[in-house]
Image (cartoon, rainbow, N blue to C red):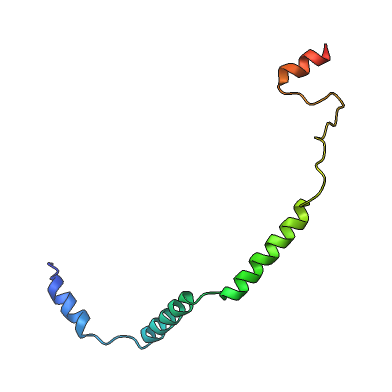
Length: 89
């Protein structure tokens, strides 16, 4: 049994399409159109950026006095592990 690709393609082209395929095509094109539209407008993005900058400045403590480094063990800040050994002896 030999299959003729040309005959199969001709029969496929002559067959009627299922009407449900039109619904799928319309849904895909509608989704593509929605994806091209920006989710947020430029003024809204600018507002979000401004809020982020202000809140970041408040959280980071802009203008706050510099603090001394934290030394939880009271040993002084070590520069390397070997300095910890020297201080322990």
